[in-house]
Amino acid sequence: MSDSPTPKTVEETLQEIVEKVRGQADTDLALLDVITTHIVRTDPSSSGVSDALRAIQKLAEQRATKSPDS
Image (cartoon, rainbow, N blue to C red; front, top):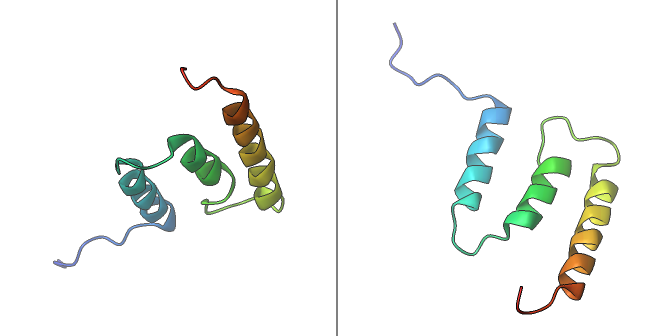
């Protein structure tokens, strides 16, 4: 029997990091979702960065047209 902890997978480690960031008060959750969907993955697609860029541009456009009261 070994007393050392079971090593985490890369996916578990990434998820743990994302959840720590998600728990911080000043985290932009919508942006974090875009980044984790497209980039922070164990198997990012070859177009992950460009997909993320398009999603971030769309998010920025939505925020730019959103009224300050909403």
